[in-house]
Length: 126
Image (tube, rainbow, N blue to C red; front, side, top):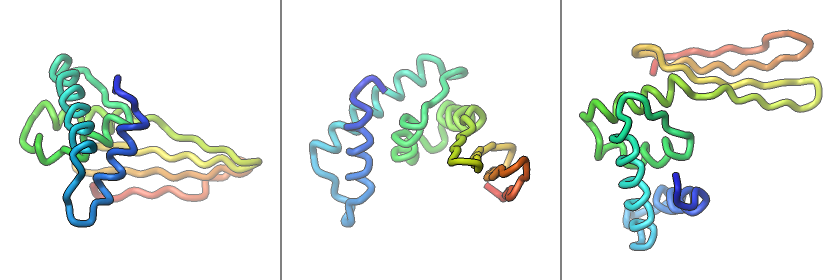
């Protein structure tokens, strides 16, 4: 997102936390401008554009707006198909988290390595 990603993340947080669903005008304007810019980028490269994690969070907030759009569905699928493996290491323990969308199943892999031992792997329906 070319606009300030921190401001957009904060605006998303405010919007999600509105208990009565009424989002203030400044937050709404910021999110609307950001989603319009993002949708323009997606439409410019509808078969290849891969959302970043921040872009996906924004797009997910507005997902209902794009329900039924093949371009939107493909953009979301590309995000999950290209989602990077997250690795966190603390001392002798390394924890890896990966998400893979395959057909109608979403596989979530949470693997902890200690001395080469796989401690947990989880998979479930999407």
